[in-house]
Image (cartoon, rainbow, N blue to C red; front, side, top):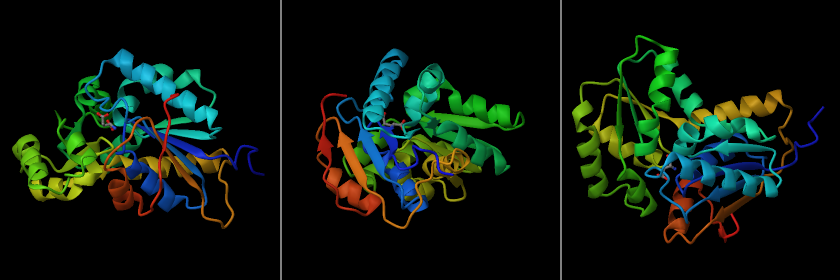
Length: 266
Ligand code: DGL
């Protein structure tokens, strides 16, 4: 029997538009589900903020999604998953799923060694990925680096530009011939996959957005939360401020033309 909450939407939040990469994977894997996405564009970037502020923003975002009556929350933002989730997870009576564990599991299972991790300055400084990888495999050699310019490049729609190539070379050129796998520990980085692969041609990339959706499907199945049916689900997108490149990015990532609703009560 279905859980009585099964017909409610799934909530996803990120600091901006990068989490649309998670939404895209979720739509592909669970096309019948309704999704409510919140992009906190008013406060982007999270990756350079303090732990206290990231926790406060995370709580506000989750409370907003709860007001939309969601049955499940994906914390698509790696910075929030790494820095805030361990502190707030137990305070909400809705399942909260972060992206770190999913990305780590896929990378650790691959047996590739050494492994690289890239993310925002806050994610890398939290050592959430590095510690989890080493817990999974003590023999794993892990290199990590923050790539702060990747986020504005993606939000400005410049992720295929020569500027993106130069940034990739600056951050990742040093890993050529040194690592075999690389975790993209930020929602925006899958948008730069091509550029990153050109910089590190032999390296396998692990995309947390793909991995977390596998976890979501499994969790929702176990908790009998899948909506089912045949109808294509509804997608609602809230942003906390206007985002000039939203339409272009949203179309590139989720292949739909959606008008975002701007909210300022988050
Ligand atoms: N969404 C954030 C993350 O995945 C990156 C952007 C930011 O710094 O807010 O870590």
